[in-house]
Image (cartoon, rainbow over the protein chains, first blue to last red):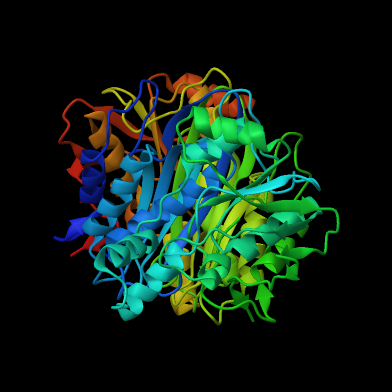
Length: 319
Length: 319
């Protein structure tokens, strides 16, 4: 655990009390592992490949704390990292979390969100760092593993002719953000809540990613930036184009939200043998993945129903 | 790599250009690994234990960007994580870095500092996330491994009678911070530069940590919060007290700086067989570790030259 320098030890909730808080939430630590409280955690792995990634959630950039809670922020920070592992076809193993919290941020509530996601996705938080900051942010790093004998599904493996799938309909998170912003009162309450939850508490598709990997997926990404933008990344990395003939739009959402909304965390993947994929989902009791189109030879082609699709999506700008 | 939502793609330095920048600095990627550019990095590990930790460096909390450069901030973020691995007796393997940079922060310079530390400590940065933020911060997570057959050295393994060692004299970083703040002109230039560098560009003691582990160290911490505070943590975790008879003060520093300054990143460890430790350092061509005292039976004892030492050191306060 961390070093902390910015002020003298006092009567507030100190780092060591936070460690106690985190420890109190720990499940049973497996033999041979050490989690929170030492300089590093000790984690046991099988020989071979581990997946390793980090994503940060920053107040005012990735979340707006006037629209969502700090617990949602904690949830999201873990969920987006788990989604990165899911997008390789992997299973989350362990996470560490660095929290920088503004003075008025409720650290316990933030940790509750992290912890709820950790429980939901079976990905224990085994270490971390805590700091004050003017801007609240939660940075998570994650370790994941593949099912034995299966290689991670990269972005770069798609070939012309591969069928493109989405693991579910798209647009909910973008529509949910609109709901939170404007309280769209023309939609029934249950819909509004479902959409808002899709934005506030995204669900990584771990089992779907595994099913895709085990069904022979050739390339995969999660829909974080938006279908068009993420497919663009997959196509670019693979040196293929894509042609979509069906964009699955989630209930209560628009086509634009489905195409470019982002943050849905559905998975999009290519596969040479669509039947093998569908079978892999079916035997695992998962909803069938949705065929959305195919990869094509021309690396410049980004088509929807025969027309070019714009590159929509979000990316930071560095000036 | 990351998702980014906060603004439309534009003409500045975008995430994908940053990925290119990071890639351009990469060394050769070992067979079977994939680094920057996919949803996660793929890292190969031997079966067994991996060390896993995260530490964040926040502007205004852990560094003051009016005193040090953003490149120093990048360096420090990697160095403090490497130090956590060193404090277990491990060797750094791979790191990921999440950067949130204020509008006026020079991201390329920040990355240069990270990269320089990555080169210096042979710990490639294999993935990351980039974001704007009102407050600049760099959060690094690290994977480390032990030398084959050796167990990580935890904080909790010290026994009464074990000799306490420090890997070097203490106080330089605290004195360096004073130099940077006040430009202490009564010290010669070379000293001032050495002290300032100790603060700006801390050096984790990787080889010293390995030598301690291989020499039978029973417990170890890095001096991040200050000798007293970190020894306190070691003693607390081990259920022993400590009695110091020699505090090694670095040239140009005061005893108070050596006792409570923090951020030196020397290692402090206990060992039942001091000769074995000294031999382990000697055969590796390392300067001999400095005997500073011993662990004692009474778990309440925190003594220096027969007097109680105060618990000095720094910890955040959470109100």
